[in-house]
Image (cartoon, rainbow, N blue to C red):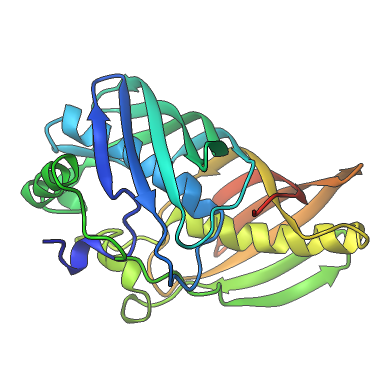
Length: 280
């Protein structure tokens, strides 16, 4: 049975195929979920690739967020829908895993990950290796109990300065351990604020700026994120400074630069495109 440690930030319900070069599985977004941002579709693909990497290295090492050349968003998954997940592994050793992958639902691609590299760190710093092995065996057999995930909270963002349509700086208050159940999964022995939730917070600033620059557009969302670099871990309770700056507007798309800093030191950087995205 799935325990609390595998309930709040785990986005693979079952692994249906696993080999050295390819892994496949699926995840159903619970029908009553309160919030499932687009970044969690990419998180699901990344977690699937991580299962392959951890199994290949006998659960002695685990990958963490590092570099992502490009993530392309095509459609938004809705509560109750099932994503079919797949990842192709091009490298896996004690230094890093490199992969690309996709998530589909209703026969159409929702998100694509291109040239992702996750550095490897010792598993026992983050979780109990035998517990992770047991989770993997469960996913490869009957799968995890459905409906585990209850959503993630809206980012606690406070504006610092704002030039409408051009630039926006704000602070992000990362939740404390007791205020965010996802730290129980990410990770049991070393709680870390998920990089995909940091990107979600940055994307929110970008959507606001793009909407100011293109006020006549329909509902806007991230359509592509390039050159993501996660440079350091963020602990629970940290206050980060976020920045989004518009680079250009072309047609129905705006391109922006993103950055997150902790006491002046870079935590993450990326570039993002914002435009209309299908959610049906």
